[in-house]
Length: 421
Image (cartoon, rainbow, N blue to C red):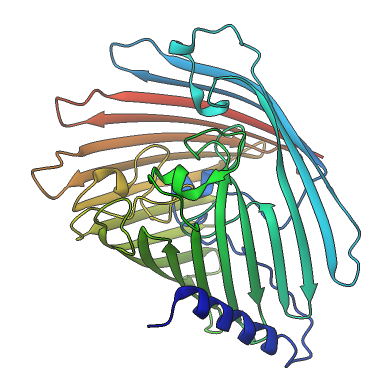
């Protein structure tokens, strides 16, 4: 059996050869297409453009989380980042970004402070969030170091004060028309979802809660857009000594009329524990579909999505970010069921005057077995205001109700304001 590292090296050699076999100068960089951001509510809310770097950004945020019968857990913060990069020389450049988050309520009772915005001590911080070498040679693009990513299972999920960042080594190639090949290794993670300390890049095994250090996450992908109105992608992830994951997605878009566009999405994810199985048994088999209808004249989009998992341990729960599932919402996603289960959601967005988008969504997440007892509904209200290309204000309210009497209902409100320059 070929070891994954040997397979990766072979794949890199193939890509290196093909990059010089054609005269095409088209460079399709990794993550040009946000693979999941157009497919779920969570993906759209957490979308982060990884190919366009602003010189700087100022950000402010407020969040409050409340369980019925308990005092709210809240936080407010200020922050932002500065980005610099060199001129490209012989196809190479170097880029750096520094991110800062400030806690203006430093004396707040930690028992009543939401920790999502800050470091593990509930304090503000500064960190070198990006430090990478970026190289382009004809059809091959290499990016090495601290960076943001946008893949189905590893993404920025930019819905707090600081997105997720990763120490990663990625190579993509587009020598074959309409085909993008990619390989990479991700070994560390910083940002609000690393679960250890948002300000530090920590080993992926520590992020996932394994009791032994691993190499991180290897991945390969093939994306093809040579069929009219169709996008296909296949991803293989190896979470070293934890789980092997295969993810496939297909999207088909069709004009029903001059002003009505419909999109059909299909997805499948399969996961199985591998190597030392440091996180125990993993057995996931999740199917998903969604339909979106965009009424362009009215500025309205309708969306319905469905996911079902038939695995023994539930849907894949190792996503380093928002995750790939079509039914993922602000709070709930099918992997929270922790067993066989189904999820569906429906909703709409409408563009209203003064550059504002308003959305309402409702979802249901239910276990298919009696042992997990997960049966919850979620209602999301979203308002997004973008008066120009520099300012974006996003407000989200999520209400989660549990059918199980042993679990307390809760709600969450957050506001994030961005000014980029």
